[in-house]
Structures are given as C-alpha cells and as structure tokens.
Length: 340
Image (cartoon, rainbow, N blue to C red):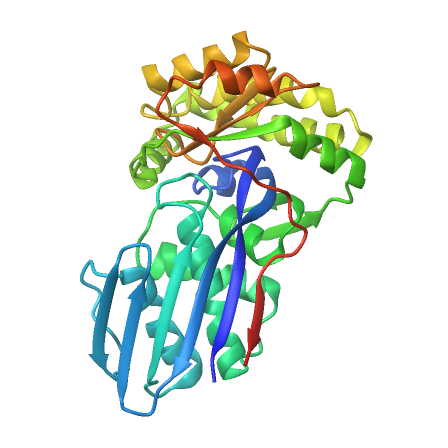
C-alpha cells in the first residue's frame, strides 16, 4: 500500500505579515492569498521491519531510524521528525514503521510557503493512513502548532490555512490564535485575467524568512510606530484587494500591489535590497503597474501585475538578469490525499 498527498503553494496578494504574532494578537490581521499549481508532495509506504526511513528529495537526504516513539530534533529533517513525533504523541500512541518520501515543486526560501505547505501535505498523508478525524481547520492549526510551538520556527499563520483550504481566500487573524477563512467566489473570467497578467519571477536567490519575521516581531513588541503603521496599511490593502477581485476591477490590482509593496518595505530591514529594487523599477518602467516580493522578503520569488499584453515587454526587459519566470495557474482545491 502507498498513501499519497499533495498541497498547493500560495502567493500572498495582500496583507502579508499581519498574520504574525504579536501584531495579529494586538490589532487583528487580514490576508488575501491564492493557491497556485505548484505543490508539496508526500508519500508514505508502511513497513513491517521496525524501521522509519525519511527521504527528502529536495535535500537529497535519507535518514533511517529504529521505530521509536520520538525522533531526535537535531537539525536534520526536523520538520518531518517534528510531525511524526506529534502524530505518535497525540494520536497513534505507539511507534510506527514506514518510509516517507517528500518533494516540493519550488525551492525552500522561495516565499511561496513551501515549509508550511509541506507540513500540511505530510499531515494529510498521516491522516489518510491512520484515518485520523481531522477537518480542514484541525489540520491547518496542527501544522501551525507543530512549526511555531513544537519546533520554535518563526512565521505566520496564513500558509498552513492556504495549503489546506486552497482557492482564493480572505483570511482574518485574531488573538487566542483564532483564524477565519473566507473563501472568495471570484468569477472565472476575472481569475483567468489575473493569472494571465501576473508574472511569477524567480530571483534565483533564497532567504531565511525567520530572520526577517523575527525583526518584524521585535519591531512590533518595541512599539515601532513605522512598522505598526505599515502593517495597518497592509491590512487595509487586503480589504482593497478583496473588493477589487470580487467586483472585477482587475486593472486596479497592480496599483494595490504597489501600495502594499511601498508599505511592506517599512516593516523591517532585509525585506528588500538594491537588486530587488532595481528589478522592481525595471518591471514597472516597462509596463508592470505593481508587484511585490513573495513571502517575508529578501529573495525567493517576486511577482508583477502587467495589464493588457505588457507582460511580454516586462519579460524581455528582465531577460538579462539571472532570474527566470515560472508558469502557474490558480487552483481551487487545497490538500488532497489518496491511497492505493
């Protein structure tokens, strides 16, 4: 038997960073994101030899253990081991024996939510295998709890919910870790036009998002007026983006993205750099009406909104840079699991 799962990566269209504590605990956060046709994959093959084999395709790493109640958290595939430890502790109550293989369609540090999406995919595979009674909110929250609490990884809450639910969602974040996911019914022609006009650009540089997020958290704790006001404006951006998409005012998307990017850069050092600023200026000078870095910033992917047919001019203008464009479509379905 083999158990498989896949969960989609996401692009954050508006509100990025307002899902991170302590900002969302104090002021409430809002995010608008959309899942895309790049995925995190997980496959479990049950074994009967008392072994646990963890195989990360992306890291080209294989670890083997005796079947134990808890695997050591020591810097090697800790994300995967942390999930196993929690599943055994809270649900199965006894060791398991299996081979787990994982792969992601985008590199770590891309800003597309790869780590959290992989957690959701792995949890989905375990839930399918062990028939765990977990709904969408349960899986998303469990993924968040493992990353942020069990493993102490800095970050927000949007990625886990985007990967689990899928589609275009307006998400609200409150204190006591309350999250409300509002699926948006975007007309298909609006969705198609948005996908046509958005360019997803891989900078060919990764970044450690935790460092930027930790700086943002410190700024909020220190009551930095500039950071908190920037995040207020990003929350406003999420509302503007929601209205534009629902009402079909698609050509306002670029200006709304630009509005958010100008405020996002004020949240913490490291979000942008001279190379990112130069690429953004080249794109807007050649027809993009706005864009942003994906995720926390500092590297990974950028995306640009190019109305009409201006994306071709933007692509030509960025041809001499080392990055490259990645094709994608929007997808409506979140986490999927199956077994054979």
